Each structure stands twice: as structure tokens, then as C-alpha cells.
Length: 114
Image 1 (spheres, rainbow, N blue to C red):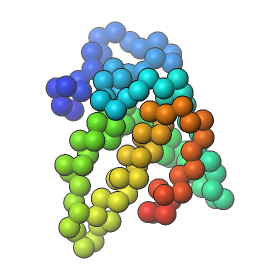
Image 2 (cartoon, helix red, strand yellow):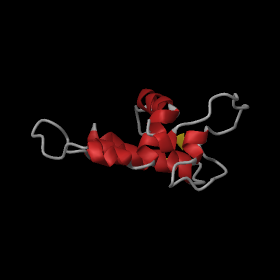
Image 3 (cartoon, one colour):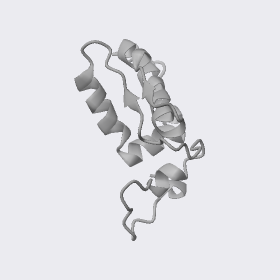
Image 4 (cartoon, rainbow, N blue to C red):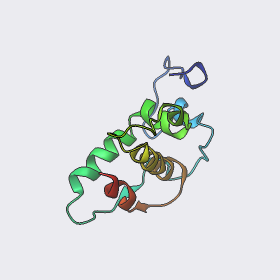
């Protein structure tokens, strides 16, 4: 984690309080439902949605995608990879989960990249 994203972990967070590294992300807009966005089931995607919710609440990972620093690590030239497309739709998911007041999100774009 970069020095600008380091959090003071000396004081514990109270339930419902957001981590300092999430709050400091330059795109964070203090949405009232930050982190409380449901993922709509797209048929048989409940297990995928549960995994995405878990990943979205790993604060260092969410901060990495919210700060857009993931973009410098994308490999867009590999013939074997997906040219960063999955990372980009995962970053979109993080923006919805942490930066909007949207109560429910359909992860269609993310599912299509699997």
C-alpha cells in the first residue's frame, strides 16, 4: 500500500465506520450507502455475488481499485489474458459499491467477462 493510502490502525473502527484508506480514496464521495450495495442475482449467480461482496470488502483491495492505481498494473498486451477487461469491470463494481447511493447493482458486465 502506498504511503498516501496508509491507514492509522492504532484506533479500532466502530461498527459501520469506514476504513481511513477507503475514505481517503480520491474518488470516494461519502455516499450514505457506501459498502451497502446489494448484487442482483442473474439466474444462478448467488455464489459469485457472495464472493464479489467478500472481495469488495477487503479494504486494501477496494482502495487499490478505487484509487485507480490498478491501471498501471494492467497487462493489455498478453495474448493469454483478458487485456485488463476484468480488472476494469471489477473497478466499476468497486465504484458502485463504495461511491454511489445505488441500493442494488446488476453485475452483468462482470459476469460477461468470466
